[in-house]
Image 1 (tube, rainbow, N blue to C red):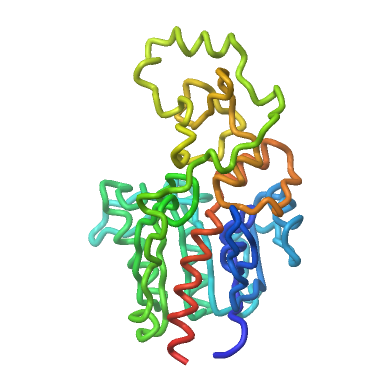
Image 2: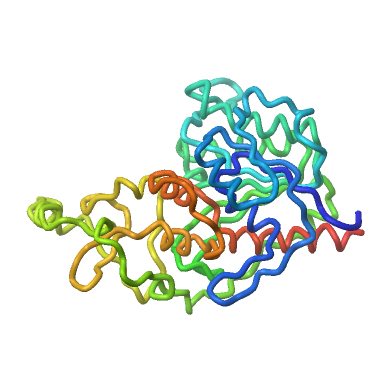
Length: 326
């Protein structure tokens, strides 16, 4: 094909995957060029997060439950993207075993993505998820996930990528699953090679100055942490080394505490949480990305997002595989 590749986005969140898929942004002084892609559809069930998305893109992210989304409502597209939730996966003890779900909401979403793939048959899909998906259900779930994608008509590959090795100031490991309908395209595709391994971007590059007092922990909270019997062992949530990438940021940063595993900062001798803008930068969102939601919405959306720079690099390799086949 020629021209732009049409992209449909499921579970879009605030648009990290979508921004990376289209490019045309700048992060830490580096320009990530516009890719030959065009977003034709986006959806998410969380209305406040859709509102945040809609403040940053020309098209609308539909507030939609994928369980009721009809395939014909999704425009024809070449690339389907989605970071499907995986909290509810379980392997049902049957012969042969199949992939099941413990509840009718989150556990079913993966199958709905496969349904859209079967019905629409785009050229390629990209799915992103936590590294823990590989070991879920004692390692039995992931092979079945891959098989479901293959059953939808795709040649499938996957790799765990660490965002810090690609110019993102965060040690964020995520599994990227990519599938092509065309075997030649599949064989041409390679995951991007690391660009900053061994010389990762430190969080000192993204910190704000003159941070509002509301982001600092009270002395009472600090004293409580120091008195905790676990204070010597619960180190993951302690102050980050500003000369290194940040530990993984999550969706519940709005409720971060000094006894949690969430990363915090030591700022002039005082503990504080990261600001929403700092979290956006840790995730490689450009400063042009508007944080129009509430603090809680911003933290949730950004913590769940796919790092745009990471997605840009994956998409660039997908475009190479597709265009080389023309």
